[in-house]
Length: 190
Image 1 (cartoon, rainbow, N blue to C red):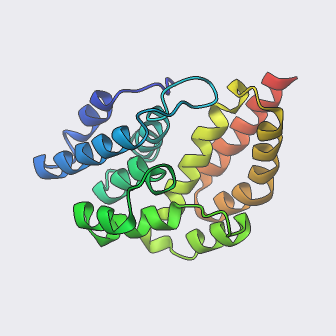
Image 2 (cartoon, rainbow, N blue to C red):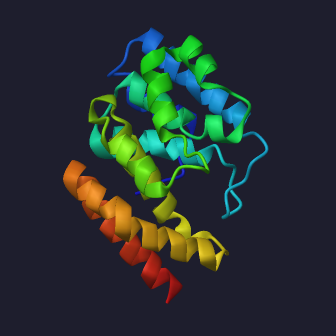
């Protein structure tokens, strides 16, 4: 499977599932995320926007989830952390449902990872747990490209401790993919 996708690829996947207004909303979310992450690079040296885009593509390609709310949330999931964009601005542009999911997915430094993930998992009706697991899956798929050993070790450890149990409770496919990706990272690093 190819994980480097463009927005045009995502849009083409949506054409038979969403109406024009819904596609326009998803595109607007992409443009806001692209602007928010304009000067950021991932550890592997790629433009940061590829990460939220891949998370959205995972929802569509791997889980057949075409919810505009979840697609917008996937695209915007790091915007509050990485830019001056506020929850209120997201609510004004995309509605309270998207703002709630993005807010749930925003990790604040004064909140432990366990509490952060518990809050996400406690809101299954929002779809936030699925988006968060797709986010972690994308991070794992590219973790072997990171030159930061401490980060690789931390991601492996937190995936085993927190994300795998969460995925096992929520979505068997994502659980299996997280396991497969962990094994791939370990093999790549050995």
